[in-house]
Image 1 (cartoon, rainbow, N blue to C red):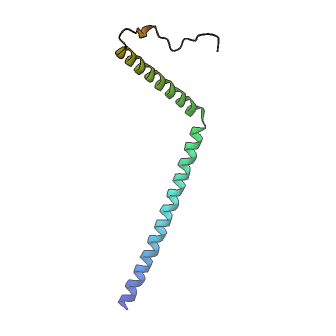
Image 2 (image 1 turned 90 degrees about the vertical axis):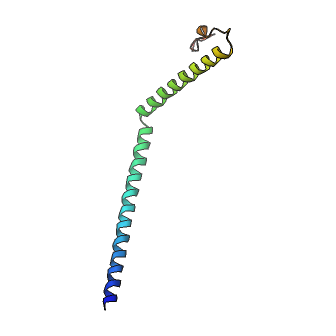
Image 3 (image 1 turned 120 degrees about the horizontal axis):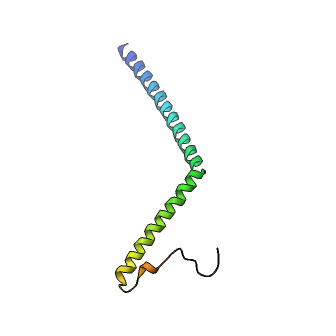
Length: 93
């Protein structure tokens, strides 16, 4: 009789554990779906586009400065102060 009671308690504990695991999995799935939706909405926003543009400009400026420093280092006779990467030659754009 005592063995049956323990087996019944074990079965109930397993069922409760399974229900808890399913509940946690459902909650995690909902959270992940909400996060994905929020990321997609942010990527479609003007703020995201603005951040991408700003980041690209910073990366370009950094790369340009690094390139100019290397040119000045390896080619001692080149005056990099006269180089203007924003100068447009030949026509309006």
